[in-house]
Amino acid sequence: MWVMKQILDLSTPAKRFRLVAIWEAVTWAALIVAMIIKRVFDNDEAIAIPGMVHGVAGFMLFVVVALITARALKWSIGVTALALASSIPPFGTLVFEWWARRNGHLAELSDDAAPRLAA
Image (cartoon, rainbow, N blue to C red; front, side, top):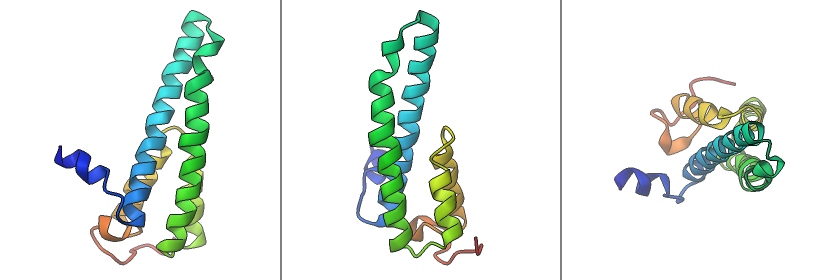
């Protein structure tokens, strides 16, 4: 319960970014499962809803929140570009979130508040 409460805390830009990064990965997982179902059962309609949810509530939401977070946390162009690029491969948003947290780009979520890399 504590972990869920911590993940759902939206009080700062970094915490909102973390939640949306996780959500984008969840929608990727749902889309991958739907694509497998589509192929195995030859059901073209299997990807209709997961595809739309991933596209709108996953990908587009992530891009908007990444840009808002980049501005709020004063990310460099390089870090912002990495955040946006992370939305393309499956589960890339999680990898970026872990990297950004480790390297001080996610404010209070990071071990060190100051960025260690000038990316």
